[in-house]
Length: 419
Image (cartoon, rainbow, N blue to C red; front, top):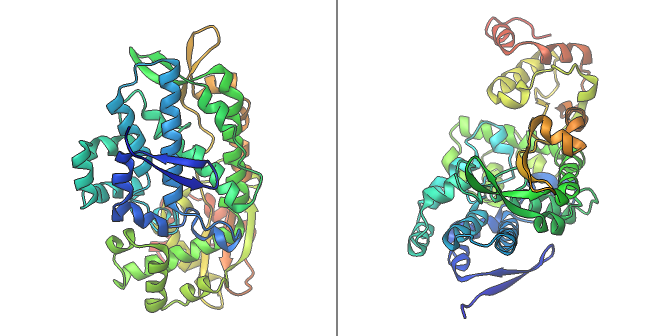
């Protein structure tokens, strides 16, 4: 009988770690995740939200074990090597994560899936993988969603173990009732389906209501937790201070990528010239000078404040000057996640036929995709944060955000007023 360890977890109770997982958990790269908070600055609003990427990684591994076991029960024939690779990919899916959640990806730094390559190639993790016979490229393809494996959707997809764990865990640790997901029903509804001549993991129709619970939990968590105004204020302040520190060469992007939360914050406190790091430490957050729900904006309002961080930074500086912001600091925030409620999974109907839950077909079986656009808009808000009370012309800001990016750049380059 192979030895294993059991970890007590507040969400899943007991998590069983097999020897192959233990060999990876005991490496510095994975241990670093103990010191990277799952929700960044959300603990400034929800004091219990101090849980880490480490416990989330263990939770994802645990759910991957359960999902694979379910597929073995209902269909059999799951390749043991493939199953192990999927479990370990779930364990390592956040290995490249930055400190303070996704803020630095928003600021334009490479995403954490790209950074995973660096971590998987460094010792002693690389050596542990080699001894296990696991190829980093195979793990990376599962992590970034490019793998052609029948089990790939369990690691990266609209019904992956990452979402099942983080939505459930975040809700529990924040103390909110919004992340309720019928995880047992979802896992118990996993099966295999034939699609495009291949066998792939799929959802049986009996799990459709549980899938809807996942989608609604996601909407609720974004609206009430991830995009809470004080969480977003801290996030944009953090982005500004890190980006300025990197631009001034006080910090390097490479060092930031492997830092822990507290180590990075201490570096910022030691080297910050803006005062924002001290404000973050003391929870003296920027306040809302403007807060407009996206449902009050035209449906075609552009996403450039979220998707073009370089342009957004230039706009912030110019707006601060034009509006005569007392301290010269203005922060624009309009977070975007356009695929928030997208679904793309094979569905096995009760009569045995197979369809794919995506696009219009998803709306034929699920209620939420039919109203996904409006739910997404109701979760988003256009905000401007400042440190001192400032009058901000709402109509002109809305007109500015709706301008094509090329027009905004032309005004910035030609020293023309943005407003």
